Length: 398
Image (cartoon, rainbow, N blue to C red; front, top):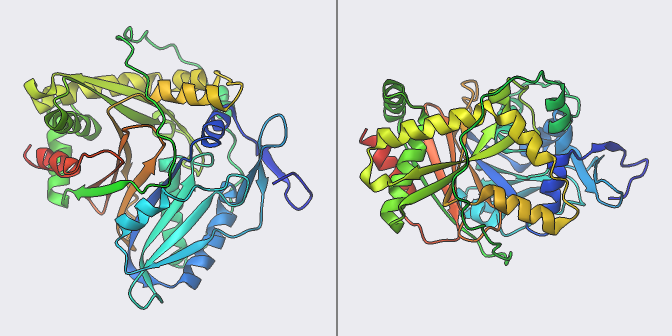
């Protein structure tokens, strides 16, 4: 999308967005949230609501121009496309979304799938899919909340285009942080699974409201967080499946909650790797306490970690790919979007993110707590059937 008066520049991509875009130029990366609705909606209703959503969040109405020295987000008036799928389980539809790369030079970098009943006139599940240059999972959840509000008849104010992550972080006061622990031995760097449009496996599990509340209170009583308990249960379940003695879990760190930033549709994250040793011979709570301590240290250093990653300045797609692979080498990724807003009562459930990044043997567990129930969905090309159910079972037995 070359720059023209019809497509004015919104802003250049920030350093981290540029790294993501370089990676995506060789390896498609998009993710979806599944929204189960209380009442069916028509494709026309969804079209209108998405048009309002684009007016609210500028990065939902852009393409990327890569023709200059630095890529730019360019404004577009094109609507978010809606595809209807009839009589299809949303997990199957989410898996199919991973077979269709988003055209980064087109516009917009988001799309929707309406999972309809047999007649095809109404839909009870909306899949929102985002290319990773414009937002992360928590930003996608913001978009989902706002879409539900619009479908409920609310009028939302237009927001300005959010600035890039590095510029925002540079404005924050720098705090003295204690030195972190020395890193352990470096793991073998992950490799790419060349994109071939093969649909991944998408598998889900959930905790009911009573179990979710029990998990929260028991985690607090044991000096842990829910995320720490998730890491512990996942490490034990994965170790039981594979026999692994040291489990590495990649965990994105949301900078909005870590640094008190505004909730917006944009990338605002860094990541850390939680390493849990001998999960089969450890109690869940000892692992959870270890994971919680590692995550707390990562949150404390989140600003510095984000700026360090952005400073890499890769010369091209190959260097960006190498940097991303080095940063995300793990047995599992747990992307926990936290608790969904209580006002989104028009949704029965929200699931996700479902996502692949073309890393060989990756396993991405998306987690959202909505309507008091914690829900997990695993996306992978590897054979780890039953893993979400095993994690849920371990959390239920606490």
